[in-house]
Amino acid sequence: MVKRDKPTVALFGGSFDPPHKGHQKIVDLALKSLDIDYLVIMPTYLNPFKEKWHTPPNIRFKWTQELFEDNKKVIVSEYEIEENKSVPTYQSISHLSKIYSIKYLIIGSDNLKSLTKWYNFEWLNQNITWVIFTRKGYDIDTDRLNSFKILDMDIDISSTQIRNGSDRCLIDKKILDSVNQFYKGTK
Image 1 (cartoon, rainbow, N blue to C red):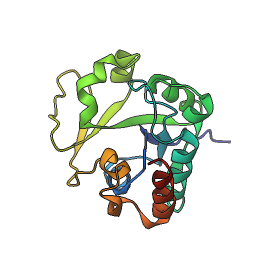
Image 2: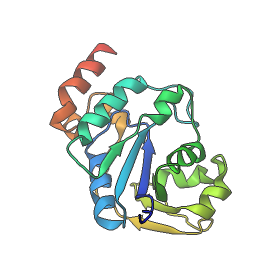
Image 3: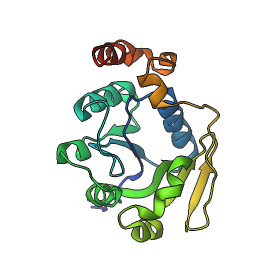
């Protein structure tokens, strides 16, 4: 029997608070641009650099899962949410490495400023290729990165604006009613 290698994946983590058409475009571009078997989307329980969330993790996971359920190359992982605490990216990659070969880590250019503060940054920098999506108003400084790819996004979307009631047109119709209902109840 021939032993098969682990499937190659890219990890795309984030708050997804709420998941929107910008996230969908990132996934589409990554699947077209990267040599991967799957793209793993991992909503955070709580971003390690934040003190609270706007939408509870289980709701954000449900929205994200519904948004990508028809794409057979996308896996939405509940790992960080099941941990019930803030989880560093290094830990999530270590967990996923039991099943997959993690080749890429997808981030927005807004993360570059604090990237060296990430837990075990040096290990991450030695072991993965950073996939950086451009975001309006954020510079691309890759001086400290060993291996990276830059993918241009031509959409400027803010989850904050969506939560505040504007730009709800940037939410896919699959989850729009649920998102509207949730934020209506939080005002």
